[in-house]
Amino acid sequence: MEYLSKQRYDEIAAELKHLIDVVYPKVKDDLAEARAQGDLSENAGYREARRIQAKTISRIRFLQKVLEHSRVLDTDALPKDRVSLLSKVEFTNLSTNTRMKIEIVSPHEMNLEAGKISLKSPIGAALMGKKVGEIAEARVPSGTVRLRIESITLD
Image 1 (cartoon, rainbow, N blue to C red):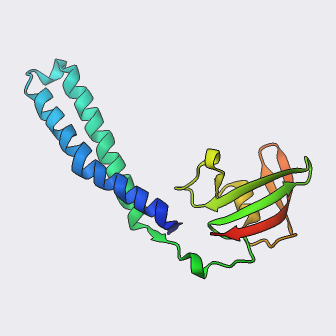
Image 2 (spheres, helix red, strand yellow):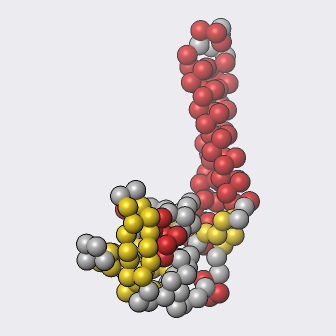
Image 3 (cartoon, one colour):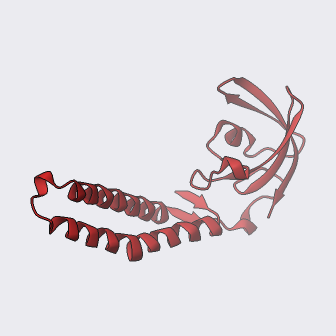
């Protein structure tokens, strides 16, 4: 079971609807057109259309499974004093004295450029359940980092 923000759940549902209603019918038409061009054994257009069809079907099935096994997270039920899913956390890396602000999200919402890290990542997992002032230790590829939590907000 994965928990998603309402925004991400809606984005996935919209992508799935677009794939089913717009992309897949076009893929089927392209495949039929390529099939009509004759000998399938030497028809590169047909092979490409089949590849695109398989890729589209695969993406549709993946998104269907994500939605089937996901629930929208009720932000009112989340703790305000501890790091949890959808928490915005400001912390200090004690070895470099660098402050960072990130948001803890599900793996399907992860976006490093937007400052969203997965709760399953080493830093996300280390921060989960901690309170302001506590120190989390995260095992990362370069070793262990100690992070002091400065603030926690939940939008």
